Image: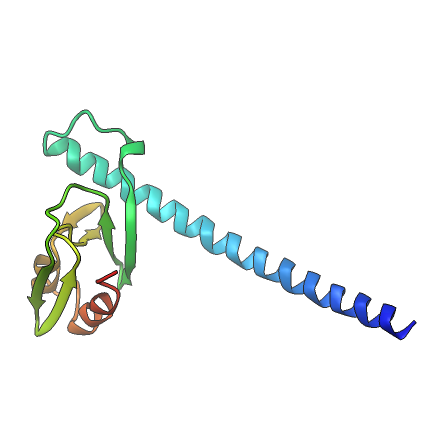
Amino acid sequence: MKVTHVMMYISLICSMIFLGCSGNNSMGEGKSNELETRIRNDYLVHLHSQGETELVLSDIKILKIYGNFNGVVVVRFDRPAWEAITSIEIGGVDLVFNNSNVPIVWHGGQFLGLVEAYDGDLLSTSDLSIIAKGSVK
């Protein structure tokens, strides 16, 4: 009898944990998915303005979002790249990537390079250090 009560208690706790976690994740995922879709749409418009008019939204794939830093998002898209280690030094911070496809910065629907964002005070050296920690996979 005690074993049955213990098993029921464990099942109840596991169910509560599972339900609590799934509720939190879906709220975060929804916001994240909305942001990713907006960034992908803006990138598609950007590529169309560069003459890449044959691309559609399903062609735009995000490989990694490095983070949201004071309203700007650092993102790495799936795009052609030279397969060579790429190192960039910005503001005394070394960023190393496994190919020439380096992240770009999304700001108000526009896209900037990391150097341009740093020079425009959109990214700090602290932000760059965080990006650097996640740069080589």
